[in-house]
Image (cartoon, rainbow, N blue to C red; front, side, top):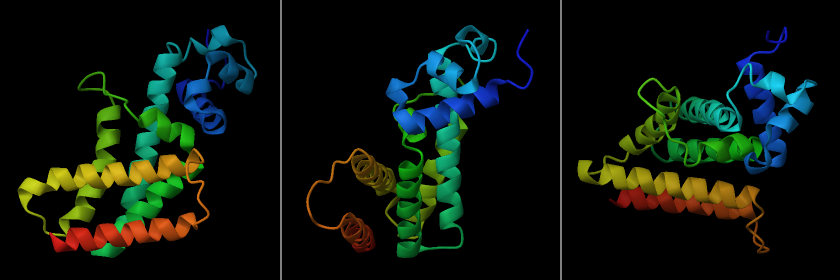
Length: 187
């Protein structure tokens, strides 16, 4: 019988918080159980194991990141929307590095998997940002991949401590956004 007050959503949230603290690659069912004050076997009444928990964390992270992008870009256009999207994704990765890392490479398991629509939220928001640049339809997918790769790369390098040079990281970030904006407008 499942423990009162414990359900899949609570286990997922605890796992996500722990992943943000220690990294998704160091997450274990025993650490989540310890965090929740239960024995490890009791977690299996709510999630099918570490792979299932990591998948649930990916759904949560993709949903939250997509919502952050949507909220930041609503009512904005062009360079303002681009800057807002970039800042929103960077901020999400800084606040939730484990959840975000869980989304990287995560794939839906089938048509009813909530991960598909969750991942689509991010793509929809970035596509909306790019729409204002009136790109040739044949270039839209390339621009979307470029934008996603650049924002992902910057944010994940930053949280991993990958920027060791003395130049201000915020200055580099703003320079990157300006460069992207000018390049997209030039197409």
